[in-house]
Length: 614
Image (cartoon, rainbow, N blue to C red; front, side, top):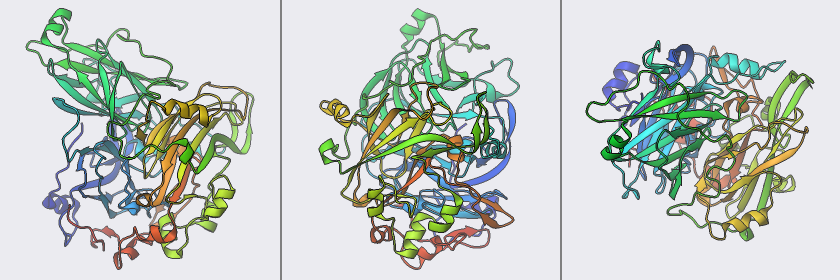
């Protein structure tokens, strides 16, 4: 169940045994621990925040700085927290990306994150660790409230956080994905809504965690349902028995014009708000029902999993069913590639949509698998190591140590140099010296993600997520991207800005090394967007296959892995503009070293300029 953390100084001092800070207490405190927890009526050793998964619900406001103190109580792992969907353009060193925006938080240390949603950021978000597979369970919901009047009317506001469950622990999954021979993590065994997997009946379950989540509603009321996906892998579709009246009003933190649908489809990292209109008393009496099933299923995987939530009307004398349906009461679509494509428009566009004639550069990035060592056998197995890459770019530890062993923002500050823009332009957008994609304010970029079948001849889907500035989503399609033909669709339609959209697969298998399928974005880079921002596939397994890895063992940092080509870094701005985003002296020095003065512990308060909430 989602909980609200109360930022009480006495609680912080008593429970966490830390010395008081000379400044005001933080708005929220998140404490990361690892322990056995119950998920899907099974026990799993997991990294969690404040004792639960999902973690506490955080409320923030537009144009208001929220201070979140994050403690790392993991004894052998680093930690960061990313504020998924919030651009952090005012605090780029608090984006939570290790080796990009910050050094990670060492065991038994803490870090103070400054999060300031801007005007227009009201909406649905979530936070999660950005280290290895921790985000599978170390995550929770963020709701950013409107400073002005909410543009839609509703009677209730509910959040539904979607996760998927893999019974293997994090270390087992990671070891297999980077092993020689490669070993897949296995498919999820369940999908949870707010911690309930809904695959066992109320009367037969050994624990509540595998029963359906109960959604209580009042007849005739209108609800805003925030549907937020923190899945590691699963693309989920869901619908409600007897209810086809869903209206999308928000996508990825931006209000949209009303868009009606009879079901929702959501990939890892995506968020949608829908208006749900409850049935009236008269309709319930006519149907002689007060409970309806919400059915959800995964898509485009070798094994699809499913579950139920229960929509229950608060009516006198109503009872809940004790057993799950013998067969699904609704049929959900199998095809996923057309849902809400070219349908979502901004309600109040925060900026003008740049036309194709304004585009200064187009960067094409191909997503494909690589067999780094060994070979692909005809029986479908990998005799070697398998990893995901973009344009055959694999970001290896050796390269990091030679060219950019420091986090990008730290490196720019210490060296006074940003990635080589000229070299990047000559190399299709990528600077081979820094392993980054630089861009300058004033540019309008089209970024086109392409899907390739790789050496195995198999395609996969990728929920592509951008840190920093949200992009205009130009849509997707099969075959080859044609910018002119696609632009014609925008004559009577202005696409909404998004931060996570799907690069679909249009076939399961085919000829090896074949490109088929694309997703296109458009970004106008401004001075406000200066910083180092990741753009990557949000499937955790894909991020690990050729991974970014930070471990801490016995107090020593070991950057023991690779940053995958599935995780690109884009550096917006030149060195001077990036350096201007850092805190002033003496505070800046604490961010420049691992375990620096910006990181506190039980006996040391960090040297940070954390102003009281504005």
